[in-house]
Every structure is written in C-alpha cells, then in structure tokens.
Amino acid sequence: MNEVEGVQGQLQCHACGGQCAFSPRARALLCRSCGTQHADALPDDPSAADETNYSDDMAGADLPTLVETRVHRCQSCGGSVVFTGAVLSTRCAYCDGPVVLTTQDSGYETMALIPFHIEEEAALAAARIWVTGRWARPNDLKVVVSKSRVAGLYAPFWTFDSHEAVHYWATYKARRGKTTRIRSTRGALGISFDDMLMPASHHVTPLIRDGILHEFDPAQLRPYGPAYLAGFAAERHHQSVAEGLRANAADKDLLIRNRIKTHVGKRVVKVTRYDAETTGVRYRRILLPVWMLHYQYRGKPMKVVVCGIHGRTFGERPFSRWKLAAYAAALSGGAVLAGLAWGAGGFL
Image 1: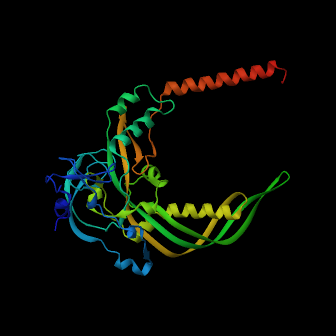
Image 2: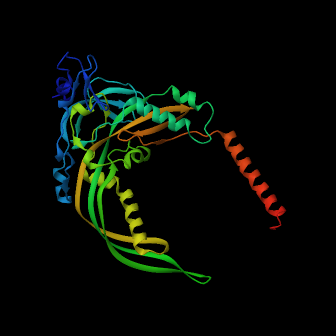
Image 3: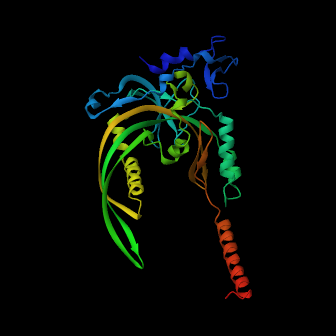
C-alpha cells in the first residue's frame, strides 16, 4: 500500500473535487479551487495528549511500521520530508538544498501534532522584521531578505517524563576572609521531568528546537492525520524510544547537573560525578510546526525560524564590520570624554 495515494481521497473537496490544504487561519481544510472550508475533516480527540509508558524490557516491542511512502530527500543535508497533498516546493525546508523524489519503507507512527496557527504571510513578515531590525546589520540586508520565502515544516519531537533518584558528589568554593578553599560534599535528591521536549531528528538543530521550545503546550496537541499536514512538509519519526533517550542524554545530563548545583547551594559548584536511577518513563512521538526562512548573504547561508504556534522568531544574521567599528569608536570616545569630565570635576 502507498501511504500518499491512500490519503489523496481524504483531501479532495466535496464541492468541486479540487485539492484541499490546511488553513491555519480558518482552522479547516480549505479548497484551493473553490474556497470551500471543511472543518469536519480535522480529527479532534482529547486523548491526543496521552502519553505511553516505557521501560527497558519493552524495547523489543517498539518497532517501526512498514509502509511504502514517497519522500523528498535533500541532496545537501540528507533530510527526508513527506508532502501530504500537492508538492509545494522542490527545496529542502531544513537547508534550502535541492530535493529528489524517492521512496521510504519504514517509520514510527506519530502519536499527535500541534497544527500550524501562523499563516505563511505572517511568518514571512515576522522573519523579515526580525532580520532587518537587528543591531549593526548591513545596509543591503533588507534587499537580500526581501527576495526570500519561508517554508512550513512539521518537525519531529519527543516529549519525555521521568523520575530520577540522584546521588551526587561535588566540590564548591568556600571563602573565609581572604582565604578560599575547595570543599567536597555529597547528597541525594529526586528530580521529576515533565514534558521534556527533545528533538527526534539530527536535522532538528538547536536553532529550530529553541524556536519552538517556549511555546509547547500539551493541551494544543491534536490527533495525527493527513488533514493537518495537507500543504506542508513533514519529517517522519525514525528513532526508537531507546535511540531517542540516548540521542538526548547530553541535554538531560546538563539539566541534572544544573539541578545538583542548585541543590548544593554554594558558590562555584563543580559536579564531579552522579548516579541516577531512572523510573516512570513516559513519552510521546509528536510533530511541531515551524516556518523557516533561508537566505544567503555574501555566499554564507543563514536561516531564521518562526514558531508556527505563536510566532516567536530568532535566527542567524550577519554584521556590518564598519558599523561595529563605528560603535566601538563611539563607545571609546564616550569613555574618554567621561574620564575627562570626571577629572575636570576634581574627582581625580
């Protein structure tokens, strides 16, 4: 069975037979031909936010589904995305490289998603305003960015819950008078993680993750279905739960170390080691919406990420060297004048 062919009928307009795409503004499938809205085609179920229990002895049951799917694979970064409905772009949403049509036989079932809330026009405006409003930007940057477009993508993420029983060993600096000594300490604490949002693909860079991290609300999750994906690119899930936990172990380690430092409550804490017993693991495989604007400035590729939920925007930008030099000169001049004024006032 071909997954793409199997959903085409679900995206046809009942009024004229044309192809529909999801409209963030209308919160409905919208026919591209006659404009008819089909709100009843969107699945809505409170259980979309439900989590699944996981333990190490369940790893053998966490297997991908075998469904042949047509995907567009990027020839530059290797990213693979699925277009549900009409193919809107021949460029990669992740890096703007060229994509080629191929097939993919397996992937993990997505449990839920948060639909796009921000339209393309609003995302494009937000990205351009962000870039052109940067401090010390080159004068010609506005013209460069005005020729760029945004690409909408459902990016794969995990949410993880867990409880960590942590035993730690650490050092800290203790100061008495003019003497500073290194002290050792140890202790134990319990840490509970709830809806820890983690990338489910190495193509989801920190820039993309941070662009959506602050906007995640499980109450906004909706059941996974082709109607929400219609008109957008989406990357399928390809990690098992065990792989997802390993891939994000460094981020979790950083969070645990920061909690330990807070628990010690001393100056300049260094965690020498810790042991953590993990229990109560629960997870979701979800898709989250992002808009990405790609542009090149003097041959260097850059991107700006707009959260598809609330429009939070940030990204990469160039600096004008002569403006930086001018600002530095102005600051130096200001410091000299302040020093002269201070001296003239008899303070020196």
